[in-house]
Image (cartoon, rainbow, N blue to C red; front, side):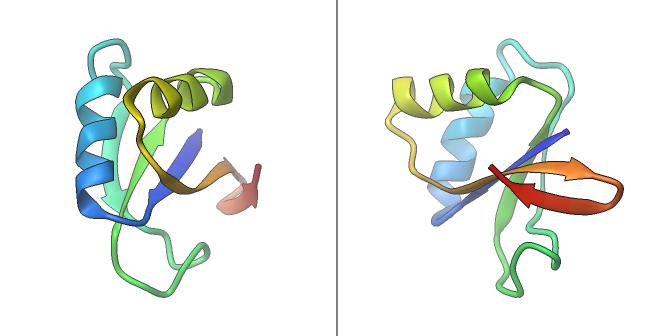
Amino acid sequence: MIVVTFHQLTDALMFEESAKKNEPEFRLIPVPRKISSSCGLAARTSMSVEDVKRILAEEGIESDGIYKEENNDYLKL
């Protein structure tokens, strides 16, 4: 799974709107504590990193980070 974090709530909501059109396995989650101790929303999806980056670029959405979730840990990509 891929986890995308955002600086602002509005960016997370814009990403959700675009991603849900083509991605059934998508949801907004609280930012995992292993990524950041601050509160906020992240997107958790099974789409490819390339698709995530494409949506971010096409919609002009700024992300804080893109992570690969593996064995309950997160690798920043």
